[in-house]
Length: 175
Image (cartoon, rainbow, N blue to C red; front, side):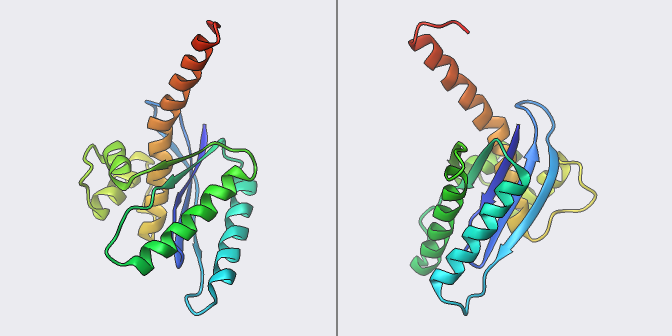
């Protein structure tokens, strides 16, 4: 399964593409950081992000998209920009009919490091190790996006299979 993970941000939006199966090692396909100019008007920044994410979905052909769920922060201005970037990422997947799943930061940390309290350095180190990379992905936004993709493969893939099996049972099928 190929997953495009998105660590949403209005100034820097991390995008990571990973292939793998639940319970198996994952493989890096690519990672990117989409940047927008803080000096530009908001509509232009969102349009740039939309175009870039749409192009990355088309280029990498993922089976699904995983986006970090926006959580409450003390700085309302920051959380608003992150939420807007998150909506653009969800739309980029939904527009082409892909399943889109959101994960909280602690869900991703727990899936990748075993601890929902892991810090950025621990996350980057584990992503580097899990993907067998020679060097850590930089900046941290890229590492976070790769962690989202890994989390989805390991947790979301299983979650989707269980939901599909339950749906088949509800409809009376056994396959």
